[in-house]
Length: 581
Image (cartoon, rainbow, N blue to C red; front, side, top):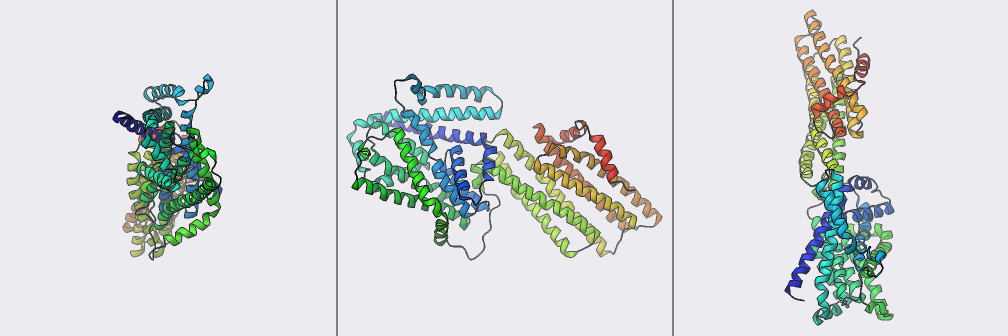
């Protein structure tokens, strides 16, 4: 093996890692909705958590990425430590999928049908199919499908390039001696751990081991300890990711390390006992692609079978190793580690936006109640709610801009844009709740009162505003186009009510039944309530935008009138419901 073979091997490794990366990213984009559905299954049920970790890792092709994501979940308070342990164990089994895919490269047979299963036979077809999908089709989902095929073809081409480059090592005595050295289980474990820590991917290091097996110098006695060590080396990514996180997030990373170290120790003891006492002949045989994939899977399954029932014990142990701080920790609402899996990060943004909507709705409801009957404690609560909407807008706006800059699917991009556009409307609704507080405080401070007629008219308007808030927020949460179309006719009724109430109050002032000072407050109240209706209309417009895949709110509001065949009937129904008579 000369310098050119070394360069070829490095090039093959680079193609292998690149192919694995782009295939994983494309798979994640294609499975975005499915990944978000899996997030909902992260319950306290041990088996569901395990299966979720297995499925997510099988999709994104990286246990390291899954574990980093879990650390982010724990740091954000989305997962408890107990739930995280189950997911991490599932991720260890899920990562074995890659080795099975790569084992196809070891197929050897003169049978034509069997040869067709070998990647060198079908990857050129996949590459052609992939490039056609990626370059000539506009649909983003089909482009992602093309990227998956291209990634797989690149991965397998890199694997074959590595295998061909290292094939000359079979004639190098020093290389043969090196792998004889690794038959010492301790040295094999250390070699596997160091290699995996460097490239930060157990799947990739298993692939390298499979490529080296083509030299014929890798026996099962050397390969099995190296595989054990690879599971320890892959923990470096999660450990680095846990720096600067909460104690529970650090514990999740430490549990990952503990789980793999304990599993390796148990299996290493069993392996050494079998090797010493029984000395099975298979340990001296040359390892194959398929054999390494089987060993990798068996090791992870055995470790999980032994330690999964001991999840509670691991949790108690790690809590002793990483004790709590004396001061309470602040949980990160949005953790940047989640950006490694954009579809999951988007799900978290959506959940927080729903929370923001709930706070804004409660603030308006409380503001209307405060106008009816002043309460200092309620006024303080509304100010706190308004501050919370400001906080949500700040963190979500910054996070969604970062998320939008990533390579995400068109569907996720549209949803991120919708969330960004709606943030301002929710925040402004919170501001208008504060306007109601200021008006209520002015009425209280100046001992002003409205006439009974004015109170009745205001009650009609506030009921209409309560309904439009509930209707638009429900349409937003459920992505319900039917409810969104009902918002615009109700908003028109609120506009008409505002004008009527303004005129009626002017007449009352002229008649002397209401003071000029109360008239100023009345005008402020009407303006705040009417503008709440405007923002609800914008929120409904975002829902219509999503349905039309066109984020043009003004055009959507027009379509809410022109495309809604029931606009006239709905307007009449709302007008009758909120009649001043």
